[in-house]
Each structure stands twice: as structure tokens, then as C-alpha cells.
Amino acid sequence: MRNQPATPRRVVIAAILLVAVIAVGTVGYVWIEGWSWFDSLYMTVLTVSTTGESGPRPLSAAGRILTMLLIIFGFGVLAYSLLALVGYVLEGQFGIEVELQRQSSWAALRDKLAVGALDGAQMLAPMVLASTLGLGGIKEPLVAALALNLGGNSITISSALAARVKETGSLAVAVKGRPITFGIVHPFSSHHYEIRLWLAAAGLDAERDVALTVVPPAQMLSNLSAGLIDGYCAGEPWGHLAARSGLGQVVLTSREIWAGRIEKVFAVRQDWADHHPGEHRAILRALLQAARWADEPENRAELAELLSRPGHVNAPLPLLRALLASDDRPIFYRYAANFPWRSQGLWYLGQMRRWRQLEGPVDSLRLVDQVFRPDLARLAYLDLGLPVPLVDSKIEGAHAAPWILETASVPIPMNADRFFDGTIFDPAIPDVEQEHNHEHDARS
Image (cartoon, rainbow, N blue to C red; front, side):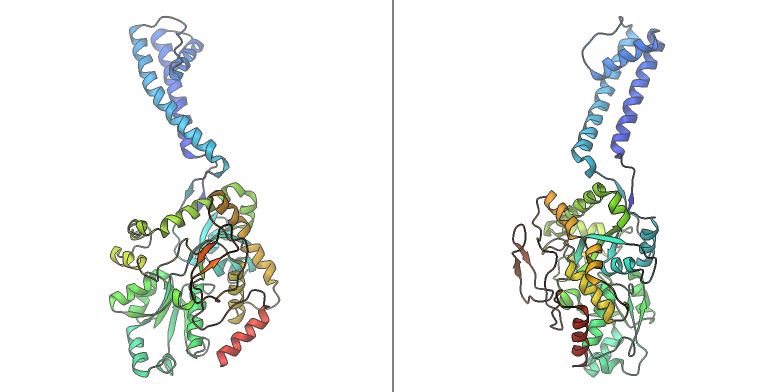
């Protein structure tokens, strides 16, 4: 996302049109009537404003024609200008225009945001923490004040590997003694942690038993088809597209791994957020409204059509329609999906430690408080009169069935959020203790 000039384009266009009409009228009266520049300007302003006052002198026939044309065009320009100005005043500092730019990879997006080539971006939730810590790229403090969706990923394995799993009855046996490679979209991604959790649950060590390689999401299918990878974890529709093509089989989805997990967030640089609080808040509101729209069942057909376009996901429309109607669709708004839970930021940091991406002392609470900003999210929710959580963290994975979040401005229905392996993440328990529990569970 690139921030456009602060003055909305419609206001600039209105000003240009108004100046053009006044200039044409003034020159016209000077040329047709031979008046002075002041009298001609005065007459033009009277005419365009349609005050009903007579001009400084009687008009010739040509002058009356010019006056009628000025009234017609001037009224239209004034009406447009008034609407543009009223819209700008009503929006005040909240109005903003943006330019969307599609990026080739998550790494390219991260780097462009860090150096200021982008003002904001949809990012993988753990990437925001990694960038702030300087892990894997440029160190740049980022802020995530809004989550964009829950879930939406799937783990897919090749048809050949699926056949071996079916034959042996075990993933661990199927990959034993074979060079197996799985694709992930980025080292600091939910996809990475989901596939590691899946492998660990099967008794496999991602460092010893398989290889993990980074592949852009849209290239997963071609890499699977070419035999370069044996499976992958990516956002939909890439998993079900492999199944539809007969190249692979979806074995697990985000909903089954952890239904309540934040997948992507809207991120900006800390310094940008500090210097553009009005624009930031406006974008958060716009994204909340878009999320509500995307989650409404009656809008799924239109959403699928938008996503199917070449400039967006560029996937088959029937497949997108089916996915958005399935239980495994991303959740865009319901269940407080847009709230940047700090407990989930702490969980992601725990995964970084567990898989040895993060070593050394880090003040986890301070870091997450700096990056995940529910305080800013709350302002956007309240601006729109939407129910919003009044707490920043919650116990993750504790609910096997739908439940109600009572600690909110209005009670919010929440979905089941159990982890597939039965673990529970309590943000009040120190990182070291939870890491020990994970290691114990893996050995059990």
C-alpha cells in the first residue's frame, strides 16, 4: 500500500474544474464584451454562483449565450465541488486514498515495507515480530493494529506420498529413509509452524527427517507437479487446487490445527504510525468494514469473482466459490477475527523459540505490547460502533465448542479454538515453562 497525497483526488479535480470555468468565463467576457479583467471576473463569479444579481453592464447576444453556458456548466462544477468538499469535511482526517501493489513474495513485501517503498502491507503475523527483531531481514520496528483473518491454510501432500501413507498407515513410516521435502511460504509464517506441529505430532523431526524449503504460494503447485517438493503448507486455494488437479491430497487444514489462529495482519512501520495517526486509524476502519463485507454469506459470490481475477489470486472461480462456502474458509470478521490478540503474539514468539529461530534473551511481553496494538484496534472498532474485546489476551486453545467472550463492549460469540494436539497456551505462563511442556509432549 502506498499512501497518496493527503488531499483527496476528488477535491483536487473539483478545484481544477472550478478554476477552469472561472478562467474561461473571464476571458470570454473580455473578448466578447470588451470589459476590463476585473468586470469580467466579477460577472463570471456572479454567473457561476447563480446569485441572481445583474452584471456590471448590459450583455450582447453572444454575451448572453456565454452566460447561459456558464450557468449550466458552472452549476454542475459547483455541485461536484460542494459534494467533494462536504465529503472531505465529513471524513476530515479519516479520508485517505491508497494504491494497492501486488508483491512477488513475502520477503519482497517485507523489505519494501521496511525501506519505505510501501507505507503498509498485509503481512504474515509472525513476520511482524521477526522484522521488529531483525530476524531474517532488515530490522525495522513494525506495528500490527488489526488482524485480517483467521485460518485459511492447508497442508497438502503429493498423490505419491499419500499413497505411501495409505499403504504403510503412518506418515513417519512412509517418509523413513526417503529424501522428503516440504514447501513453506516463509520461515516466519504460520504455515511453517503448522507443518512443524503436524510433523511433530507424527513423530517426525523437521530438522532430521525432512527438508523444508521456501516456495512462493502461487508456485507450490508447479513445484509439486515437477517433483521438487513432496507437499506443502500454503493458504488456499493452492491446497484444494492440487487435489482438484489430481496432484495431491489435503491432509489437514488450519481449522483442524487451530481454528482460532490469526493468519495475516495489517502492518505499518512504527514511525509511520506515529506520524500518521489519522490516516492509520482511517485505514483500520476501512479494513474492518471490508472484513465485515467479506464475511457476509450474500457477498461470497462477488468476493470469489474479485479474487479470481488475474491481478488478485487468479484461481478458478468455481473452486473459489466452493472454498468460500466450505467450513475451511478464512474467517474475515466473525469471532473477533480482526482483533490483534497479544496472547497470539506471545504464542508466535514461543514457536520461534521452540524451533530455534529466536535465541537469547528477549522481553517477550514488551515486544508483543510494542507490535500487537489492540489499543489502536479498539479505537477503530468503537468509531464504527462495533463490539470489541476489552481485554488484550486470552487463554488460547481452551474451548472445544463455541463460546461467548463476556469481557467485551458487547458479548461476542466466539468459535471453538482447540489445538489439534490438545495443548493449551496460557499467556500468563513464562516462555521457558511452555517450551519445556512442548518438548515433553513431543517425547511422549
